[in-house]
Length: 125
Image (cartoon, rainbow, N blue to C red; front, side):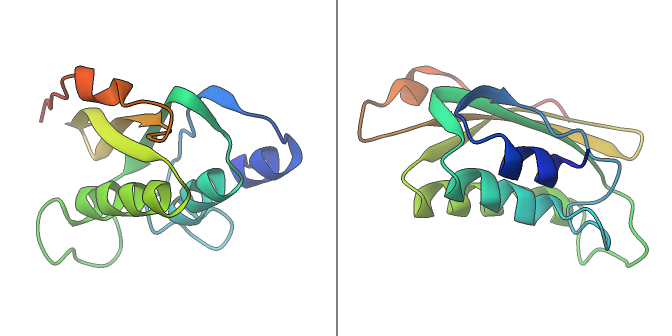
């Protein structure tokens, strides 16, 4: 089952979602990570104070405009989708290793409280 099929069939809130993609953030004809992230926020799948983690490939057939382009695209897209749907998303951890990058976002509903402000994000490149 594709992640998209799962999130559209299982209508409930989650503490933790971890789509482990084997493609770039741009995806391919069947798998569209950025679109999936947007759908998660639109469907309100996150409980207050939850995690969204993902693994994506940094390799792609087209040349990136700059190093970290894919990472920055995911970072800004997740933040945008969260904000548009009443959430806040904060990058808590990321790691890049052998053509893959891993990201963990803390997700919360700011209208309830700002628990994420107490967490210290860190990066490990």
